[in-house]
Amino acid sequence: MRLDSALAFASISEIGKLYRRRKLSPVELTQFLLDRIGRLNPRLNAYLTLNPQNALKDAAAAESVLCGKSRQKSGRDLGPLHGIPISLKDNLYTAGLRTTGGSGFLRDFLPLEDAAVVTSLKNSGAILLGKTNLHEFAYGVTSNNPHFGPVHNPWDLDRIPGGSSGGSAAALAAGLCYGSIGTDTGGSIRIPASLCGVVGLKPGLGRVGADGAIPLSPTLDFVGPMARTVADAALLFEAISAQEAKKRRPRASGLSSSRRSHLRIGIPKHFFLDVVSPEIQQTFESSLVTLKKLGAKLKEVSLPYLKETEHAGNQIAWAEATHYHQQAGWYPLHAADYGEDVRSRLEMGQKVSALEYLRALDLREKFIAGFHLALLENEVDALVTPTTPIAAPLIGEENISIAGKDHSTRALLLRLNRPANLGGIPAISVPCGLTPAGLPSGLQFLTGVNGEPLLLDLAARFEQAHPLNARPDLSALE
Image (cartoon, one colour):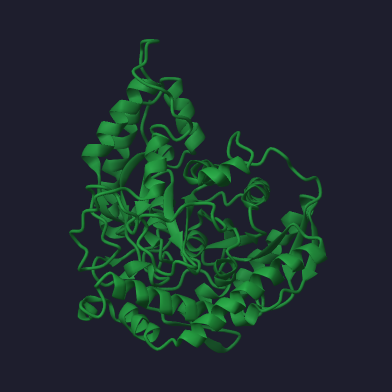
């Protein structure tokens, strides 16, 4: 078949059908994407490392199984991800393929083993195209990397894609892979998903193993899927979920098979909508109209400890990040080799007292209990909020004015995402429209522990009723 740009934006299931009908070859598709990356990535800077030799080798193996002319195929069909080209955030260990963590002094680091999620993806037959750019050590929200250069947002190359999984989101939005795996400590999957118009799922506690991911804050770190559709994110989540999590969840296509006819969705009264730009408020209100049309019952709810989550999250992240970098022997030995923003946060981590850290952990426990109690008492299945209170800022834009008041760009992007990390609860960002400037905005759903199937089902229904129906203009990348 003719390989054109439309194919680069196909869904995982569509690609799988083409394979199994022998209308498309995994080798042809993998080479097509590698060529596309070669053309578009120099200006986008989404990929740091490509894996062409192994990718084409794995594609040939998938082709012999999925597209073989003989009925005596040379292997077993491994399922919906078999032969699907994906990417990985470059803080996930890949044996024999460099893992920089976005840092200068790990530029040539070659892990001996794969991260747990990488092993799971390989067992599912996915094809690794390469490793994506990120904020240094995943310790920021812009993906403005001082060692490898900034990632550019495909919707506007002068703007950030968000971070820290910015390279993954940019690659997806530009049609340079069919799925990616990111990490999320304060919104690092959901923020770039929102700013780049893709889907990002932050799983809950214990749902996806983080072994082999360079830690930022072990208490707050989560590994999760990013994709262009909810169904694709569900397939990736199914592949990387811990075995115990899989036992507790319906299988099938990765989406829940049991749909509630009348979902009850809570809208937080405070905090989440206190500081939101007018254009994001508009897309949020439009999304609520769609949810009502879907039959959802909306109810305002109050959540305890929300204002305290920022301080508690900071104390935990600062202390744990500095502790890990000290344990690894990197800090302060390589202090001069860190970007200024990351180095300053590591310095802040040295100042967190044991008492402050323990108080933050106590607050975390109270917030977890209070969140689940609020869902129960208000009889709501999930909460809905904007994912970010602003659309993608310009690269280097450190402050944003909302209602005549200046706010730190970093604080704004983290603001609505931190609570899910502190609470260890699942959250998903799904595109919900474009601003008047043509920039994507995201809608966030949150729910209680083990609630990923409900989130995926709810997000899929919303996506179907409220599609983005737009792609970035990539002509500037050619």
